[in-house]
Length: 336
Image (cartoon, rainbow, N blue to C red; front, side):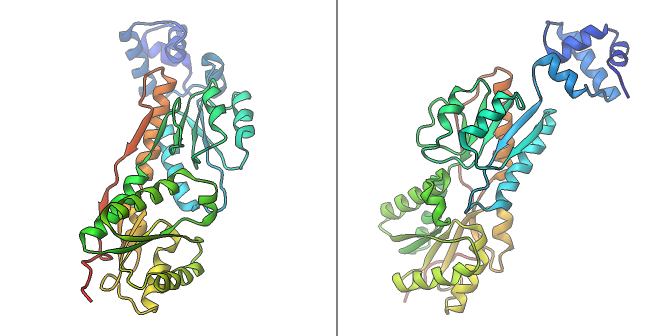
């Protein structure tokens, strides 16, 4: 095992200088720092985690707070988590995953025990009860999601309002005049989960702006719910020719349900979605979609947090613009 004395000998400095380079407790010249860092890389030295924490008052651990509430699509959440963990490891940080619905109490417990240096918080609600504590903590945080009042917080996410607008505008360009949103499970809206609410805002605003008839239908995320919502849509909107889906598990079942009800996709009904690209592309009729950039959001959330830990200024708001990819599920509206 490589020791700090081996690094010092290789760099031609004292062990205390290596320690200062690692902890930042005392200033050293840039040339010396570079020699130490080169020696660390060449020898593959890894500081003992406990000693490093004592020396720097840092745990080198980030908390990823993602309460697994009902209505959450866990596979997508795990895509965010993988991106956060992978990026954190590039910065020599580990990730503590907090999945229980503990609210402020859980955050306070983690912060007070110095288990983590900083927090990434997911499943943000418009009026999230955790926000006052996050603003008051002496540890930096980044939210994946935008509450209604983001002042004093650092937030990043896909621009879900613009994503909802992009789907409707795509259908409008193809001549569709009656559209519907098959949305997240009802409990997601009851909690006022921010990303789901933003999609509804964007969908409704774009439809109203374009003079389209529109409706919003929350739906359970189980395949059996697809047939019921498809029947309801066609019963309530017989002239329906465009659908936006913001409910990943329902994509394939909805395509099957509409076709069983006698509609061809895209001949009779055009379908768009907001979901990961690989999910949209894997459906039997590949779905035109706005990508859910889980990898980019997770990576940039960690980069923002590293900047805050390093005392650097970072933007308070980072909204990623939607990117729509046309696939086989959308086509111009057929004149009746």
